[in-house]
Image 1 (cartoon, one colour):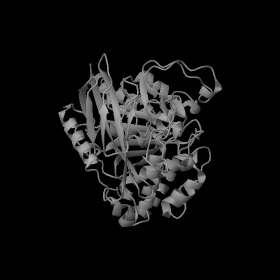
Image 2: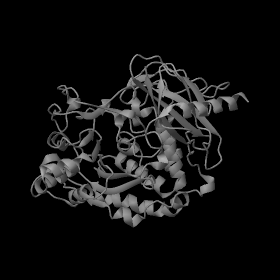
Image 3: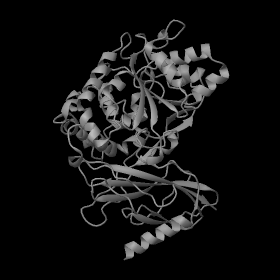
Image 4: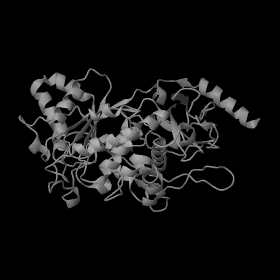
Length: 482
């Protein structure tokens, strides 16, 4: 009875709080458009990331898959390797469609494959440097679609540079500015010298990158960073063998062993997966792909780690979306009593903005790989989170308010674990927030005492007890008025 009373209070309080237009729930968000540039075969991790991406092709509109060069592969491109993975995808497609009929046909994906110039960086940009890949990218930019166009650079980015070069040669400055404003680039660091040129010459392009070649400080490295003091099992070779590679059909068998690091390119599209947490066009809010701030980073030090092909790039000429830091430690899961509690901070870094979600997105990948071989009733599917009330509310300083997810369900009938927590870094208020029993389906929160308007982000993670366990989210942005 006490639990029911608390839930009722939460519902009433949420309704009483003044609602604003907030981030859309996952089911209301249209699919993101994605155009991929990959130096596939330079490192097995491109193949790894492509296999994962194809498993989410039911939820992301893939509009191009272009084989490119990079600092690691300067004179050749390998579109045939993309086509080979798509052909393998075709072998498991009938089973994938048992789980979601929206998976695209093998032929449709194969038609998206092309190639850029087999040249390094800006040597492949100019009057006579159009390629099938750059032509396809120009067409995607010109497409009459109001949605942003995401361009992933898993390797070099000179194919985008050539597309922008051609746009500038054929369109007015006003139209170029309008068209490039809807471009969102996520580059896995700078893997050629075309990235700095784009950022300088096309200031309207939204650009997410850790500049230069210092991979050790890059946010995307959180996917494969081994952290002291936590369980890193989900990026281990044993975990990959058991959950992805072996006894997981044709795509699993095609997933290569780790050479340098596992799936370094995957963070470029993780934020596009509609999980209820990520808001892709607001990177400061954070999500599976990491969290970023918009600022002009300090000039790179004269250090060989920063060099790309032996070159230290000039300082950035404008703000870009780049490294932000989170302080994070995984929640505790005690044997007795409350099933989930906040844990102690084990790392503060840019990489922590991504690895804090790592077990969740790795388990999600493992479940998708199960979809390639198992019927619907023998595989796991993510819960459906139902927040009672708005995703953005306004309360007064010191006011108590409730949040509830009563009505959340699981398509497989699995038991659910709820976990509400304050995510301080995306908001303006970074103090402690008492949430009470974080693992109930409704919580009662007292707003902090403030002297000016502040914002705070409350995240609900709902995880089922299926195998592997799957997590979906809701985010509530609370504005606290003095």
